[in-house]
Length: 455
Image 1 (tube, rainbow, N blue to C red):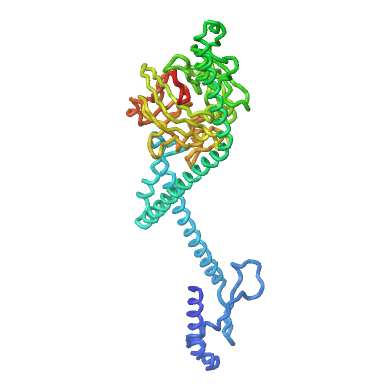
Image 2 (image 1 turned 90 degrees about the horizontal axis):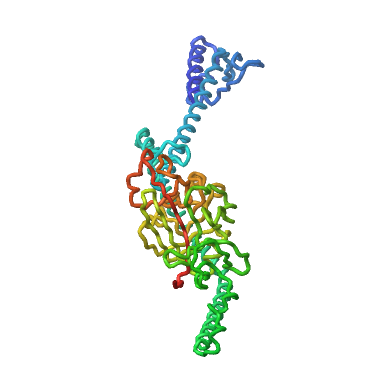
């Protein structure tokens, strides 16, 4: 537009000079002095030229043609460059606002107790503070508005996740319904037969001629133990490695049975005692299990699923630190889904002395969470893999308030809290800052037993 205004002003000045000299018809004079004279202007290069910057321009106002200087082309090119620069500035401004929104979104995610650090991995920095200090009021309003929207979207996403988890649980229940009904019927029949056999055995006990043939216990050689509680019921009271078969359709496998502590009959799922086995493993290792049942080991997610699907299980977690302090957490309900559902954890009914770290708060709750490993991210943290960051497999939230599969430290340590962690331990309040020492645990054990077990 500025170029047109310059053109019009130049033409008017030239035409006034022509009028003063007496040349040109009066009809042209009327059009130039009128408001519509600029619409008759035609601007074009004069002839062929190799370099546009050296190409003269001419203006045609019928019947008058005026030759313009070569610098006129430079003026037009400068205007185009200014317009392009303006568009580039607008795009940069838009990108900055977009970048600020992303930084605010990252700042919304908090770790399980780790303070803000400068680490590039899973950083929990103070980006939002910098945005509010450096921006003007208008930018701050835009960022605040976008933050409110992101909060609403996050809540909607969490609600959707909960509904999906509920539907997946219902689907699994339906898939197992027929199988469980059959198993329940078989179990009831076996119990009835066992009761009848016991009754007959007791009757024969009162008969002097039958005392010598009484089995102890009845039909012991016919019973296949499904877990360590069955082995304890058969009269075995010594802790050690035994074979169990929780599902006859699957092969038997070895487990460590704790037959001495807290009434016995415990099937040990996990044990840490000296750090001889690394728990920084991939999905396949956690699926099949690793380590030695006589020492440190993880039983395997497939086996844990088989043990927990046939009976209602109680979970007991034993912890001991290097000061000799011991504590436990007991959950009245414990279940691990199959691999199709990423070994989702279900637990409830806490009691104990170590605190309920598995259900620490609304935002750090391991119940109903999927299993994650360094090579398979199933956690709730949207900007990274908790398994890779903490170097273990676990039912991470975003990220964790408990992790019994972290690195085994033989003393207190500093920095990233990647060791064995239980957030409700009695002396963890002084460990907030990365420069402080982290609590280390000497031994950890996870074990299960049926609810209806009677020592």
